[in-house]
Amino acid sequence: MGGYAVYVWPVVGLAVLLVIGVTVIPSLLHRRLIKEIRETRDLAA
Amino acid sequence: MNGFISSFQRTARLTARHPLDAAHAVAFFIIVTSLISVTVDNATTSGNRDAFVIAIMWVVVLLATMLGCAAAYSQDYEDGSLELLVAHQRPLFPSVLGSMMGLWFFSTLPILLCVPLGAWMLTLSTSVWWMLLLTLLAGSIVFTLFGVLGAVLTLGIGRNGVLMALLVLPLYVPVLLLGVGACQRYANGETFEFALASLFAIAVALVTFVPFAIAALLRVSQEY
Amino acid sequence: MNWFRQTFHRMGSPPYFYRGARKWITGLYIVGLALLVVGTIWGIGFTPADRLQGDSFRIIYFHVPTAHLSQLIYIAVAVAGFVFLVWRMKMADVFMVSAIWLGAWLTAFALFSGIVWGIPTWGTGWVWDARTTSVLVQLFLFIGLIALRGAIPNSQRAALAVSVLAIVGVLNIPIIKYSVDWFTTLHQPASIQIGEPIAIDLAMLWPLLINSLGLYAVAAGVILSHMRIHVLRRERDSEWVAKSLLTK
Image (cartoon, rainbow over all chains, first blue to last red; front, side, top):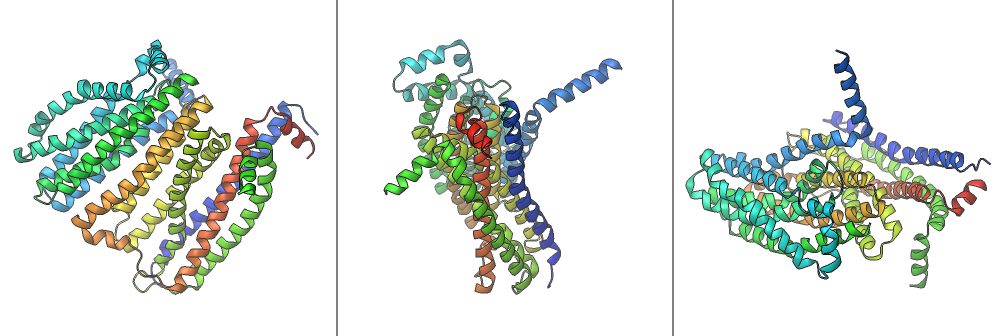
C-alpha cells in the first residue's frame, strides 16, 4: 500500500454499512408488516 | 418549577410526534447557508467587495420574495373560491398566470423598489446598481413562479412555511447562480452578456412552463 | 412488442407483482453482492496505486458508481412521476416512494466519499463547483420529495405533488451543471479540471465497471423489495393478501 491509504477505509466501511442497511432493513420491515397483517386480520396459520 | 418540567416534557412529546417538523428548520438553515456559500464563492476568488454585496442582496431578495408567496391561494383554498375557479375556468393557465403576475406586481415589486436602499446601506458602487436591479427583475419573476408552485404544493397542510422553503430553495439555485454571476461579472469588468441573456431566457421559459404545473396541481387539490 | 405490453400490464397488477418480484429480488441480491465483493477486493487489493494520488484514488471505486446511480434514480423518479401524471398508474407511485429513500442515501454517500477523496487530492474537502453543487442540490431535492410525501395525508394527492416536484426538479439538474460549468471554465479554470477523470488505465477501470454493475443490481433489488412492502401495505385488506399469507 502506498500513501493516503488511511482515507480509503472510512469510505469502504461506510459503503459496507450502507449496503447492509439498505438490504436488511426492507426485509425486516416486510416481516414485521406480514406479522402485523396476520394479527389484525386474524389469519394466524 | 413543576410547570417548567411538565411544559418541557410536553414540548418533547409534541416534537417526538412530528419529528420532521423540527428537522425542517435545520434543513432550512443548511440550505440557506449553502445558497450563500455558492454565491459568495465567486466573490472570494475576485476579492471585489461589490461582488460580496451583490451575493448578499440576491439571497436576501430571494428569501423575501419566497416569504411573499407563501400565502398564495391559501385564502382561496379555505373559503372555497378556488373550487369555483377550477370548476369554471376551463383553460386554467391564463388565470394562474394572471394571479402570479399580480402577486409579483404587488408583493415582489415593492421589494425591488427597496433594493436601492439596501444597496446604499451596504455601500454598493453606484455603477453596479442598475445591473443589480436588471438581474433581480428577471430573478424575482422566477422566484415568484417557484414560490407560488411551492405554496400550491403545500396547500392544505398546516404549518407549511418551512416545508415550502425546503421544497422551493433547491429549485432557485440555477437562477441564483446565473443572476449573481452576471451581476458579479459586470462588477468585475468581465463579459456578462451571455449570463444575462441565459438568465432572461430561463425566466421566459419558466413563465410559460410553470403555470401549467400549478394549474394541474390546483385541479388536483380540488379532486382529492 | 406483445410480450412487452403483457409484462407491462402484469407489473401494474399488485398480486402479480408481489409474487413475481420475490425471485427477482433474490437473484439481484446474489449477483449484485457477488459483483460488489469481487470489484471491491480487486479495486482495493490488486490495482496499482495511482502515481499522483497514491491509494486514495481507490475511493473512486465507491464514489463514481453511487454518484452515477443516484442521478439515474432521480431521473427515473421524474419519469415515474410523468407516467403517474399521464396514466395515474399505481405502481409508478409505489416506485417513486421506494426509490426516493435509496436515492437520498446514495446521494449522501456520494457526497461523503467525494469529500473524503477531496481532502488528500484537492487539499480541501469541498469546492463550490459544478459537480459538487449539483449533487448537493440533488440531495436537497430528494429530501424535499421525502418531506412532501410525508406531509400530505391523502396518498393520491401526495403522489401527484411528488410527481410535479420531481419533474420540475429534473429540469434543474442539467441547467445547474451547465450554468456552473460555464462560469467556472471562464472564471477559475484550474479548479474544475481536477474533478475531471484523468485518462484511466484499463487495469484500474475493470473494478470500477464491476462495482457499478453490482451496485445497480443491488439497488434494483432494494427498490423492488421496498415496492413489495408498499404493495402489501396498500392492499392489506384485499383477498389475495389473505390467500398468499395463509398458504405460506
